[in-house]
Length: 452
Image (tube, rainbow, N blue to C red; front, side, top):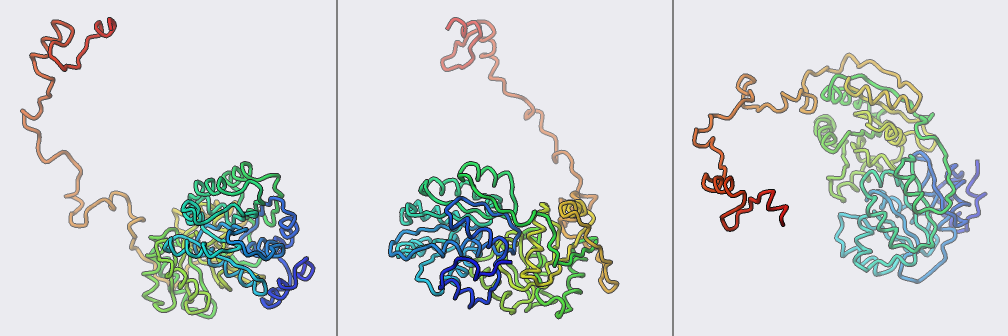
C-alpha cells in the first residue's frame, strides 16, 4: 500500500492531508495520480466509496499554478447539486494552504447569482451540466481556457438525461484539453462517449462491477407487502445502538414520501428525507443533519446512492431491490467504507424476487434470508400499487356491482345515425359527368386527372 508521502505531492498538499488525518492512498488514487499528471486522457472504473474524488483532485492541484485570470482553467462536471457542494468542499479542504478560487454552480439557484459569481473569476468550476450550459449560453462564462475536463459519475449523468447538454458542452470547449472520466459502471453509452471524444485514453479498473464488498454483511427478508415492510422497519429501528445511522433506499420519490410519512409516526425527530422534489436548502439540511448525527435515519432515492460522502453509515436498507443490479452495489457501497464493517438489508416481496435473483447473479452470491420476527405484525392492507388493476380503477363511491363497463346511457336517435354524404344533387352530377360542375368542388375523376 502506497502512503501519500510516497506520492510526488507539494508541501502544501501534504500539510492538508496531514490535517485531514489521511495516511495511505487508495488504489484508484495511486494509479490515477501519474496518468492525470502526464496529461493523457483517462477513464477510471471503480466502485463507489473508493476515493475517486481525491483521485482526480490531488494531481490537478499538484500542477495548477497560481493565476489571476478570470476564466476557469479546470472544469468538473457532476450529476447532482449535492455532489457539486461536496466536491467544492473536498477541493477547499485540500487547497487549505494554496491560493485557489473554486466555484460551484447548479440548478435551483437564481441564474443571476451564478453570473455574478462567475464574473468575479475562478480557477476551478464545479457544475451540473444544465447550469453550466446555461451560463455558457449567456456569454458570461468563457470556456476557452479550460485545459482539463473531469466528468464524475458519468453513467449516472447519462441515465439522468444529460447526454444532450454534455455533447453541447464538448463543442464549446477547446479541442486541445485533457479528458478525465470516472464511472462505477461501463455502459454502452459511456463507451460511445469515450470513442467519440477521448484520444487514446488509459483505463484503470479497480474492482469488477458486481463484486460484493467483503466488509459488508448482507441479509434479506421475504415480506408480503409494503405495510409489513414498514412494520418490520419500525421494529428493527428500535435498537438505536445497532442501527445508529441508517440509510433507507426507496424505489422512487413517491415511495420515499410514503416511507417517510409512515416511519415518522414512530421516529418523528430522528428521520429525514432527500429526493429531487425537495428544495435545495431542504436537501442540504437533510444531508448535514444526517452526517452530524442530528438525524439517525435518512430516506433517499437512487440518485443519492452515487458519490455523496455520507459518513459512518451502520446499515443500508433496500426497501425494494433495484431494477438494475449494478445500482444495488452502489446502494450498499454507502456502508462499510474506509475499512469499517457495514451491513445491508434487502426487503423483498414475491413480485420482487426476479429482481433479487438478477442481483445475486451479478454478484455470484446468494443473500442469506432471515425469518421475520414473531413480534412483527403481518399486514393484509395493500397500497394502491399492490392492488389488482381492476380494483385500482374502481371508484371508492361505487360498489363492484355498480361499476360495470358498458355501452352509453342511451342509443342514438334515428336521425343522428344518418351519415352526411354531400347531398344527392352533387352525387348525381358527379355520376353523370364524371367531373365537378359546381365551382370549388374537389371531386375530380380519374380521367380528368390523367388529362391534366
